[in-house]
Length: 212
Ligand code: 5GP
Image (cartoon, rainbow, N blue to C red; front, side, top):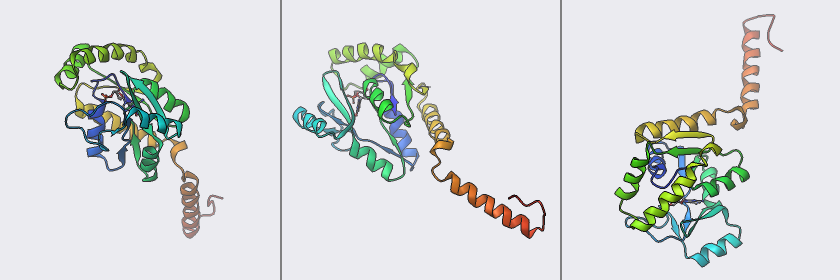
């Protein structure tokens, strides 16, 4: 799960991660906000009307959802299940209220907060992408200031100064988390097989202290 203030660069990191790694997939969120130029249905978001979004909330189709800047955003359970079903890591790009719900419902998830290198860089990125009118940028900056206070709730912090470096750090987090003993489902089988082989081989060597 990646969170950051708007303009912090988490979507760019997610995109690079997807390009770089076949074992990573992305959960395409649903939203009621309007499409930005260049955005595609089903790729950037599932764009829903408010009533459709609310119908799906009532049908319990969301793993989490939250309101951000007057629009609703949510992670569809079906997206997460599809990703996990394919045996891959599923990346969620969500704001902090949704992240709190995910943390509660999926304590096994790994949460990374992406920080911009500086306030001026955050403003530069938000204004530079020309996707929001001035008043929306001002609202997003106010939300950003609030969101920064949630950083300490996350497992990891990555500073997005250089995107290549930031992607490498998120990839390293994925890899190290995947090595956690509790995540290795068939560890017992692997260890049992190793011990059996060890016994067989040491018997063949004729050793009398073969492991029991
Ligand atoms: P944007 O409008 O810039 O695409 O997204 C606005 C904010 O909504 C970002 O902080 C983004 O991470 C967050 N967001 C995107 N999808 C979801 C989602 O499925 N759930 C939640 N809670 N937040 C989301």
